Amino acid sequence: MANGEPVTARDAGGRPGLSAKQVAAVVAGNAIEFYDFVTYAFFATQIGRVFFPSHTPGVSLLASLATFGAGFLTRPLGALVIGRLGDRRGRKPAMLWSFGLMGVAVIGLPLTPSYASIGVLAPILVVGFRLLQGFALGGEVGPSTAFMMESAPLHRRGLYISLQAMSADASVMVAGLIGVVLAGALSPAALESWGWRVALLAGAAIIPFGLVMRSRLLETKHLATAHDDERIAPGGYARIVAAGLAMLAAATTANYVLDYMTTYASATLGMPTRLALGATVVVGLCGVICDPISGWLSDRVGRKPVLILPWCVLLLAIFPAFHLLGATRTGVALYATTAVLAVASTLSTATVIVTVTESLPRRMRSGGLGIMYALSICVFGGSTQFLVAWLTRLSGNPLTPAWYLIGGVSVGLLAILSMPETAPAKTMPQSSRAMS
Image (cartoon, rainbow, N blue to C red; front, side, top):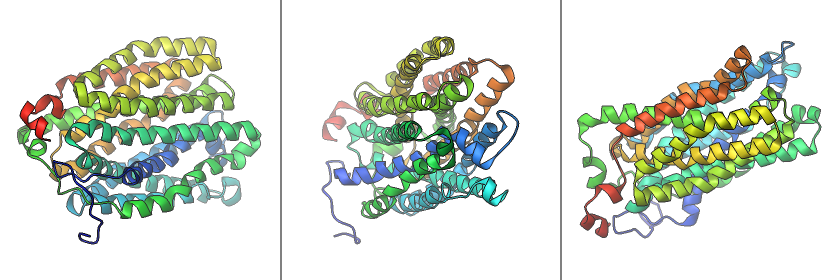
């Protein structure tokens, strides 16, 4: 025992050799926090009718999506408070705080009575729980990603950190599967009345497990190498921050346009809810498969090739995919186009987090990454689904999401070109790599 914590074997670089259960404690916690956050988006139509009733078509959906966006407003604050806690006190206490707060919101939101039951207090409570969710999730990303990087063998950082993205995509897939089952088993009235609440509450089951497992983790904030803190001159961090923000903004835009496919298919294209929810499963499955592949490849060939090539394919595929979907409006077209876009997107987006994390020194890794991520997702993630829905309704053009996504990916590619290569396999001398 050391400082009340179990001693774990360490690798040649002094990093703790995490057990499968310890890795699961981090990535499962990340998954559950993302599960409830994104499940709200998948049931935005039903939630809008329950808490924001309106006789004007589309207004309830817009109000629900605006509330979804409200959860992004407190992400920077959560990143600042909890992320900085991770730099000052340690990664583990920060992860425990974020997970505990998220648990309150995970349980509270689906138990909120409808507008018909308690009037205006209902949307106020929903907005409040969304703000708490945003605060907790904003504080989760920095400490947990820093922990995974510091726990990883030097030449497996990409793979380790990609497990974070994989866990988030797994939560998307599970949310979609639950949605498909509920939509198939329940009538539209039952799905709107209580079915979406079941989907949200399903995330609460893992909270006790996550808290117990995270309390047993070893602290990693003291683990560092000269490669971490001396690779980039201090004057270069302004450029790193600017490029990192743009890359994260592009990745966020791509993720939330893909997450919007369910709402887009049902609300814009008029496809059945059960069919539309299947798109969520496709997005999640593609991420679960492609995220670790992305991390593994980036460890071997470098970060930049894995960042650039898939997004170039994505850029070329966006317009034809949306055009085909709008013209056919079939389940096969929905799933095929979603799969193509999701594979091209997730092969790159997992490595975005790896690159930004590696570019930051230990002393600011948790808070710096958390704030950059939160700011990007606050501005772009919080607005993407609302703006896409609003612009589509305003223009009457079902290809609006395609143009929005093209703009976001283009900005991300320009930012990637200005970033240095950060993979140890490409930046360290051969002798150093052999010793690590």
